[in-house]
Amino acid sequence: MLSIVLILLSTPLSICKLGPTSAIPPWAIRSSFFSISRTADELSIVCPTENVPQGTTQEKGWIAYKVQGTLDFSLTGILFSIAKPLADEKISLFAISTYNTDYILVKETQKEKSNQALQKAGFTVQMP
Image (cartoon, rainbow, N blue to C red; front, side, top):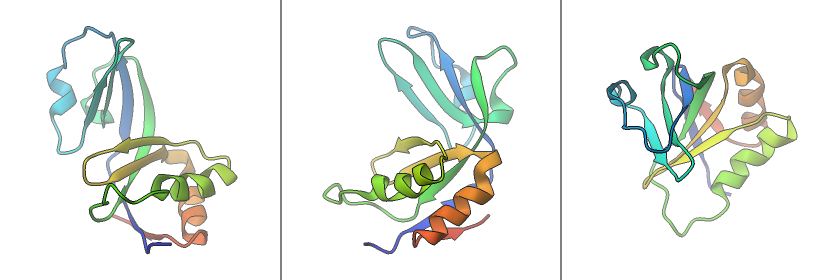
C-alpha cells in the first residue's frame, strides 16, 4: 500500500441541493474550496457552511480530508482503502474527486472516530 497522508481541512462544509436548471449562485464560489456537479436531476454544491444562505436545501456539519499529493490516474483502490476503515466503523462518507486528488467528507460529529479509524488503517492524518 502507498503511504498516504490525509490532510484534515478546518472549514465546516455543507452539501447543498438546488434544482437541475438552477444557475450557479455566487455564494457557491466564494471560497478557495467548493465543488459543483450538475445532473439531469439536481445541482449539487459543496462549500463552506458560512456561505450558504438560509432556506437552501443543505446538509450541514461536514469536514473534509484531502489526500495529499497528486494521484496518477493509473492508481487503483485509493478511495476504497480510505472508505473501508470508515465503513467498518459505520461512518458514512461523501467523496469528491478532482483531476489531482480525492477529498473524503465525513460528518464533523464523527471526526475523532474517523481519525482513529484512518490512523489504525495506516494513514497519516495531519490536523489543521
